[in-house]
Image (cartoon, rainbow, N blue to C red; front, side):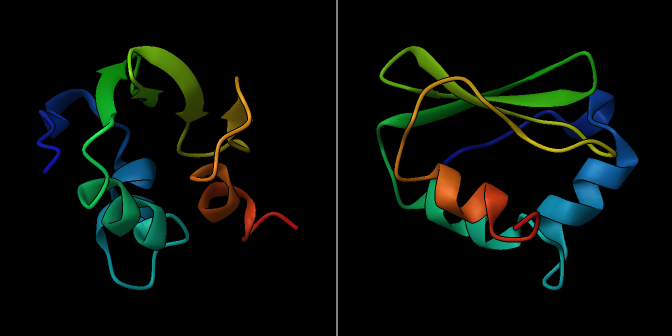
Length: 81
C-alpha cells in the first residue's frame, strides 16, 4: 500500500489520481496492489519507481513521462492515446 504526503502534490494531479473518474485513478489502484512500486512527490509531480528505478513521472497538466518501459505505464497513457 502506497501512502503519499499530498501537501505538495499539484491539485490537478490529485484529482486525476484520487477521484473515481480521474484519468490516473486506475493507475493509482494498480499501484496499491503492486509491492514493487514506490512513489515520491517532487516538484508537485509524482515520481513512480519499481525496485528503486524510476519508471514514470506524472504531472497535473502535462502528459506523463515514461522513463522506463513497464507494465504500469499502460494505465498512464490510456487517456492520452
